[in-house]
Amino acid sequence: MKRPRPATLPSVTMEMPTRCGKIYVTVAVDANGLPFETFVRFGKAGHCGAAIFDATTKLLSCALRSGMDPREAVKALGGIGCHCGKDSCMSAVSMVLREVLELPKSCKHALRSNRQAL
Ligand SMILES: [Zn+2]
Image (cartoon, rainbow, N blue to C red; front, side):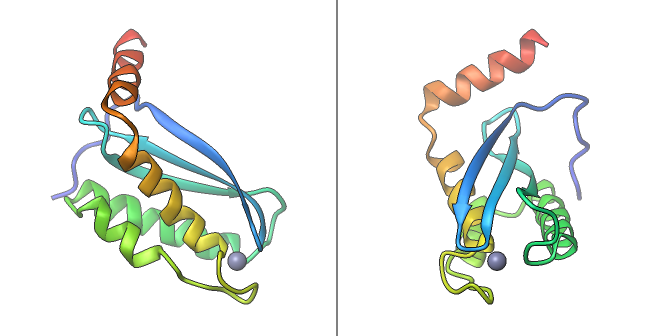
């Protein structure tokens, strides 16, 4: 069962330099500070198929909202290469998810109280 999306969610956006160019990965977190949904924006349109990324991150968001363990997503996307080689745009998404999972509890608390202040 997919959890309903609250009207507001705190999120982290990281600029990730990859072999495929610069991408911006956004991970929104739930009340427990765990990844809830993801978005990717390319610095330049068209790199490695923005449509593929749209599809991947939509499915990933759906999976996360349906109870997928975010660590499984980190594993699944990590190390995926593209025509530019390893350290691709796709593995950058995995890295951002992992960083969000490793955020210290204090940061997650700050994100949460941020949300409550909205
Ligand atoms: Zn790529």
